[in-house]
Length: 218
Image 1 (cartoon, rainbow, N blue to C red):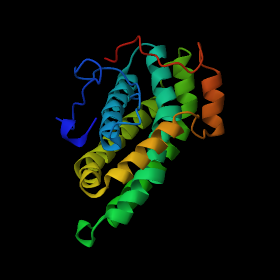
Image 2: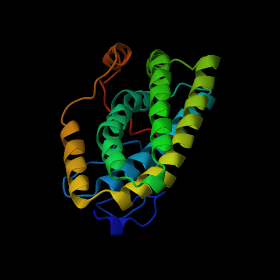
Image 3: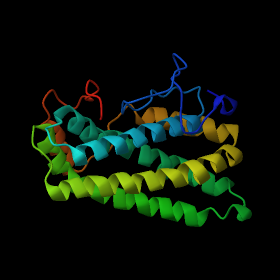
């Protein structure tokens, strides 16, 4: 996928069918020959669906085991991998290519701080999500935490989609993009580093750490 193939930042399309990606949180399959900026837009689209799923869990009046399992897997596996792509691959390359007038450093510092805060919030939510994945309803404090995290992640995505990725498209060279894409593909061959809470929670999931893609959020 090349830069010129990107039609709408907010609605990435399926590579296979040309249809709008919809109500599933599933990390896009990465290919070495595509543009990493486009892959990140697609991952951001899936993160917005994750936010919607967290809002559903926060409001539910009945157990949503598969939905909770999907959110838990995303927070423990998929989102950390995406954060690592940005912090280890995108941010350093963009910092090296940015021009003084881009005033990039405050934005990168803000995004890195937001990643850190989000990771702390994930850690606190993991035990509660594991209980929800096994049939429990969220406690009032868990509902509030889910809403806060969804809201914070939406604000984070606005900055990345409006500032970071457009600038990356402009400043990164083709060699930069190829190297970044190769790193992203290689990183998906191994599981991201997981803290103990995630490791313990994923081990308790019925059916293992598989995406709960058969339950519609809403």
